[in-house]
Amino acid sequence: MNDRIVLALLLDGPRHGYALAPQAGLILARGPLHNNVIYPLLRRFAARGWVRARAAAGARGRTRKLYALSAAGRREVQRRLKSFTPRDAQTAGAFQLRAGLFGMLTAAERRRILAAGDQVLAGREQKLRAMLAHFRPAGFPAAVLRFRLRETTAERRFLERLARLATDSKSVGGRR
Image (tube, rainbow, N blue to C red):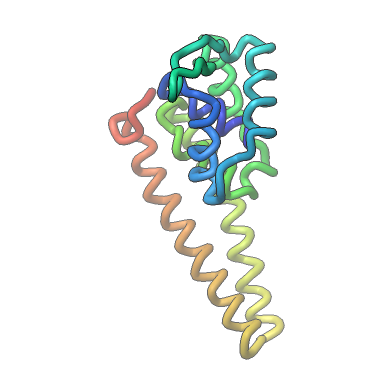
């Protein structure tokens, strides 16, 4: 997932490696990615031709590398976004990354991803309802199961709203 996020961050234009770390951390809702994650990824991307590095002036007169996505890198981001496996559908971060970049995908690709996400949530909702009905829990277990059920139901409503937006290319800033 880190690789997809770092590549996606370069979509908006060139960045210094040290600027990517906190931005990736924000997307992941955690602290900045460590340099031992960012720089090996950037070197690997450069070796594959997805990223170009050039020297640029940095703070306090130091020369720093500025990383930019190449045309091949942009194609790789699209390829990775389009690839959405059943396992990806079960991972909130994998889904949310794609939803945030829906503008790079066609309406058909957006619909496919939304349908896969909804299928996972529908299955979770069904299991939670069955657990509540079968086990009839009380106290803390019941509170947690009911919370998860409300959360899952809310996520499905969110996907319905996204599906309406996903058919309007103006809403996603992208392709039809």
